[in-house]
Image (cartoon, rainbow, N blue to C red):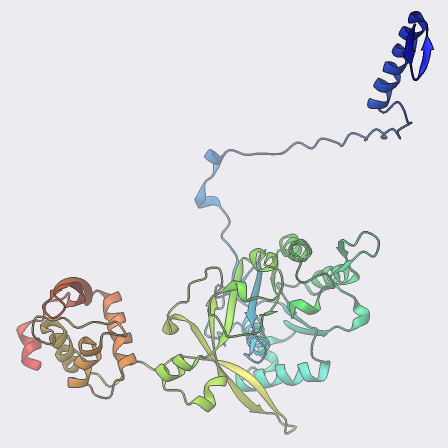
Amino acid sequence: MTIVNGAAQPDQEVKAATMDLLRQMMANAQGGGHKQPRAEPVAPQAVRRIETWSAASIETAKLPPREFLLGDAYCKRFLSSYLATGGTGKTSLVISQALAMASGRPLTGEHVYGRYNVVLVCFEDDADELDRRVGAAMQHHKVKPEDIQERFQLAVLKREDGKLMVIDPETRQPTLGPLAASLEMLITEQKIDVLILDPLKKIHGVEENSNDHMDAVAQVLTDMASKFNIAINTPHHTNKGAGDPGNADRGRGASAFKDAARLGYTMTGMSVQDAAQFRVPEDERKWYSRVDSAKVNIVPPARGALWFRLVNVRLDNGDQVQAIEPWSPPDLMAGMGKDTATRILMEIRDGPGDGERYSNATGAKERCVSRAFELHEPGKTASDARQIVKQWIKDGVVRVGDYYSPAKRKQQQGLFVSIALTSSDEGEA
């Protein structure tokens, strides 16, 4: 006899009970102890063939060139954007750019490739205010109605016009809103070349900080630009804080949108340092802004940026409205003749004495190249001197090289003149 589950059983019965127990354990391990819901078979997806072509077939001479419309900022089939804080003049800028493309005149200092049909859709101003702003720009730039005819159209949208993309209440995912179809109808009816949607934050109703959501918005716009062969520009606000020229990461919300905008620019108010360099009074600094490419996070030199200045325009009804115009920093070489430049170059060539070399570094103190300017052009500031020498270095007139400093008893960098100063030059000096 054998004891199984606390009861005595014959050996043959024990064997049978043990086998039943083992079968039950195996069934439970395989899910047989409880009926599991069986997964429904998934319908096979239709397989789409991916088309390819050989890179060896590319003939660059036969490729269609990109269709730029204004400078490097507007191009058909591309999405562009200006990233800027409030008050820098981005709406005034796109209005003047729209007038430039409609009239064929370089009102913003950028090259105009032709005359185009432009529609500006505004989401912040009402119709009267938009008319004031466009009217001020036309008055300031002396653009007459016959210069643009019907090529520049305006639209102001309200809440009932909907959004380009919204969040589906059931799936919580972005989906097309009613504005998408309305814009496509507008593009077709007006035969648009350029569509400006100002600003980005007002055209959609999805999560601004979600990369997935903002990527969906950008995809709709880039698809629209490609489908209708148009340029689309959507000015965008930046985060609060100090301006950072050329930094695309300053744009509000997720980074997906700025990554999708192939032509991205920052618009930044003039800094205190730039105002000092250009001798702009502090109380006027707020009227000046610089535009930089935002596809790289490297701040270009202030003189290499595209500068603009806001101006007040008095309309015929008495209102004062802002417009914008291109502005160029003052020429650093103004007032310097060839003889003065030669004297300064000779001073740089000979050095400050005692075997030392002048330096263009801000902390050079006694060796600062501004001292060479003080001797022959005292009207130039230390900042002016460094900027001039920076340009001379770029032009190959002056170079930076190593030398042995007797005072420091070590190798350090200094300035050398790369060109030969002739006897006639020295005679002038």
